[in-house]
Image (tube, rainbow, N blue to C red):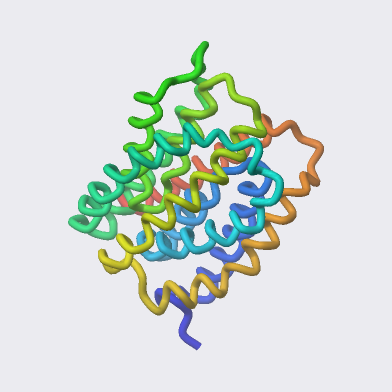
Length: 248
């Protein structure tokens, strides 16, 4: 049996474990799934192979997690984020389509490490940011969603503002599927959607659903902020390994 993207048996086991852990983190904290899966995939294949896969999985998890989050969504923020992403995503895809596999691995790993440092730094603002700042964050999110990781800059942006945990998570849950609907045809146009994409999506979806469900039940008696810090450190470790692979 040939596995998608010519990944070997141990690579498939690695991706299965990474997917389950990433989905758990996403169910618990509301972010991190795409970045973790793509950072993990960079160790066994071209990370761009998994961009469309994680978008499909994110859409499925959103449907799974949507119940009850509607009243907490800050739709004003969602609107401005999307307006910025409309500009940023095509530019990001154009840039990624011009570089090699190792260069893509290095760019993605460096980006993830940078975002992890920003999140761990604990940057804080006294007041909420207005439309202009949210629009600019949307542009960055669109650029970052070229490799399927548009959630990290938004998570960092939200974490810096006085925002409740429920609004934080609900607004991310609302933003992702709309961004993904816009992203899907652009991924197809740039050749990031193949038959292997569909097969890989079918394989990881059961693990994704299980991890997301477990994370959403909050089995750990851990403060969400402490868990988020653990998730960021785990993500930084994966990105660090990916960067080493790119330069060795």
